[in-house]
Image (cartoon, rainbow, N blue to C red; front, side, top):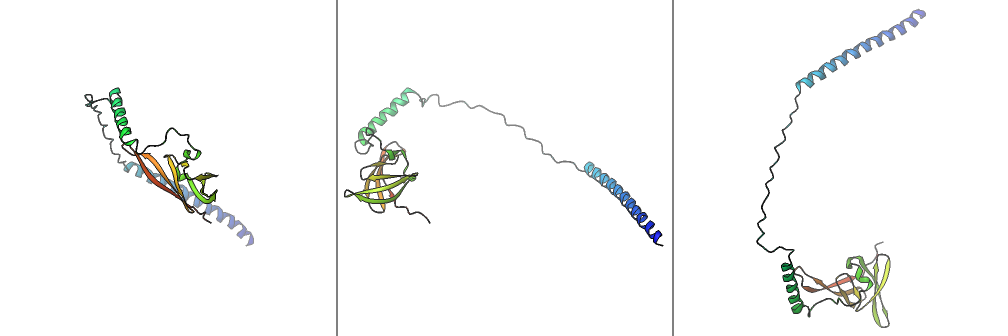
Length: 184
């Protein structure tokens, strides 16, 4: 009996393996057949590409007007500037003939007021630009818009800037830099 059991186990396992392999090939064949049927029944829905638009060149209708790059247009602009300089130039204009100071290379938004002190009975502001510390007094020029320091108090620095507006006229505006404390 023991012998019979030893023979039956491998035979049963072999038959089970043979049955499973037969099932695998049959289901694989069915799967392939189903996929072929689906491919033959499915038709892609591709929309046709629209025809390209035909380019129609436009004729230039401004030939009768003055060319914006002509000498005549440049002469008119220079005359206009000289008239404006004569009427408005004496009132507000930057000092173009003076030597530029080191802090005029930097825009105001890159400068940080980090402190102030009194030296020789005059207020001095301490400005941080990048990682460098600068001392600024009343009358010094800072910023890229011809700014001149008007007033220094303990917590702020006030300056007058001269800049051109959209029409090309020089206008004046007041700006301030306030003391900045470092966040912890």
